[in-house]
Image (cartoon, rainbow, N blue to C red; front, top):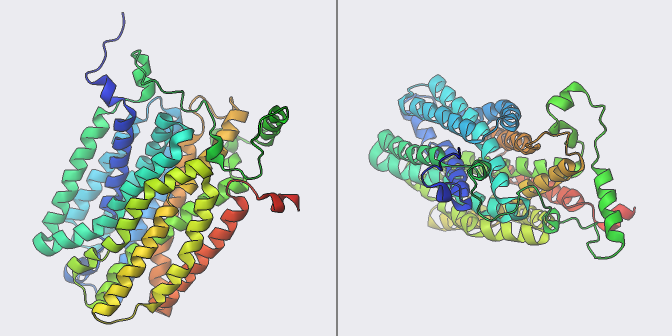
Length: 473
């Protein structure tokens, strides 16, 4: 007897709804992560009664607690996700942890409770990012991953960067309860969407397809952006493909650890390592802005939580607009140009942030203009990392179809990516907060600019494959 179709099967399993659900899930995670950013200094001062010289270190520590927990949980989430028959169940479990975290943040009256809440948020993030990105790849396939990730990252960056704006505004107008009322409303929407989702493979079991190819069936040449490959037609093409396959072949006699967590073998590939470095630096930059902008706005311009949140708008708008466009260029031309140009562009812009000094309206205008320029760079670097990492791991999966299991290594890859991204969210507040206190805000940005310069250079050498003149040497 044939199974009866669930109500709304067509739209619940559509690409648009699945991608939107993942986008809302990641948005919710980053929104609630950043919601308390502009009000943390005021909460620690007014409610926890910390002395003013301890505010920056505790702000950085609470931001880092979230990311540290995510670093520890991400590998486990990836292993479990690749072994489960469905992505939906762990996706819902992650939301439960986020709900508990939000309750604790709402009720917390001391540093310990706030820290536990941030740890629970980190656990949720590890699950949501690992499962969500794997679900996106299952749904759209590698050939559309760049523009999809670019669009999602452009959208969720609003959650990460607009949360401080809304958090500051609402806290100023209606206090703590208003801030978390908004948080619970977004959680409710997220829960409903995750409950309704029907994965593509589940829909196919009911005999329904949306007319798409198997997501892992084809490799997009554009996605790889491999400048050392000759994509011309002719008799040499099969030989090139065979050489590529041999390059990614994995010997069968692997240690037990590699057999249990096979993505570890792929980490010897410099392209994959550089792609993960891009994620680390991107997250470090985001967290650096989160940790320092509110305190700089308060110290330099005398801003309250309202204005400290509003200043993030200058950073948000370019990021939101450029995300999908940058993702399209990554799909079309490969990840190398976006990575090299994006990180290279951020070097002089970050150095120019040294121009910001305490003062009135002219200094505020300078600060907002430079933050807008930073937002342009952040929009460009949003998708190269995940697209490059997915392409490299896909090549290993195609060359070794029996090594990674039926679901492939993609959830494991995204667990590593989540772990690295969370490490950046940990490093960013701790290092930037420490540097700001010890050498000043301007010199701190000089250090961050140097990090972007190194990343741009490594991207030129490794992302998309080595350039021909480097390879010939």
